[in-house]
Image 1 (cartoon, helix red, strand yellow):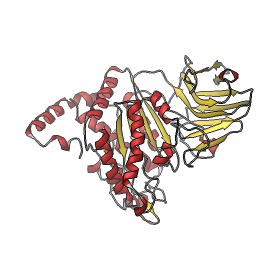
Image 2: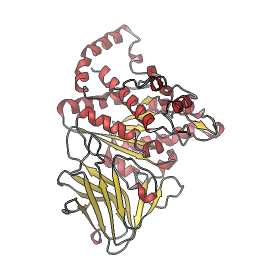
Image 3: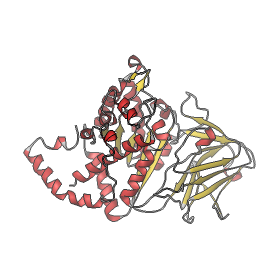
Image 4: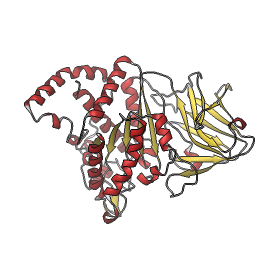
Length: 425
């Protein structure tokens, strides 16, 4: 049931809703820069069940109310920061869906904040988002959260790389010529080594050759430097004279700007709930991040098995272990579940999509979260064929095209902003 639907059962609630609508202009004015969903061409529009494009709240409004109050305060005062963490599989690793959402949030606030945690996926010879560029030198070996025993410690990125080279670099460029643009004035390298901390030197170098030395963090989770000039490109240089194993888990180009929404995305091709539970450093990473809004898109790989092999109760149990990590990091975190899109398995619509949706509704009720029903918005069972015919899905009818991912992002963002505006209290 959507939030609006739950508030019209009694005359008293109808009066409150009317008062809320009268006040809605307040939040509407604050959200005037928010990109809103607009109908595309008729073929694309015919693929969308717009009546289903609303957040579903099967339980408490406590956490969404707290989140929306924080968002209102940020937009009104232009101070503070809100952190979003979006986790999933290949839908997220490609960073089309998640980056569109990141850009939509930046347009809402009128400014960009911290870009999120980055990793040089080219080390693993796999894809990553086209909105930024990373290059590296040195010989690196990688591990992801897909095998039962990954071989390297993993955290919030779901991937790690190690090197024994005495000298290695990673260059980060946040500017690919598109808008909006991200910059950094501090950098954190999430890493670990078997060598003494004082035997390794990590520096940051800008395009002009200026160099800053990074300091090891007290908890041993990485290296950090701040008070940098605002820049879009930097090279991380690792000097490791001992040749001891150095493990990189992520690079965090940070921004000290206030009034921003910092959007972190974590996606690994093929990742399931079990995959993310293999990330032994995830707890610590979440404790540092303390996300305010968590967008949960794990499920398409869990359900890519025959109907009789998929166990909804085990699926929910694994999810609870992830959600409990989030709750520990931030007891007030808002959970937003994205249902599986309609997809095909061995040439037929995957009927597990309905069971995943039901599981998410149950979890949302249990944890006071909400659900964005991608499956329903698409048109339900078998709708991916229509989306494929409209060039919104790839031939496999599992993944979307860029056009399809951006459409989904705009629809979900519109549902979130609509709830924010309509429930102005």
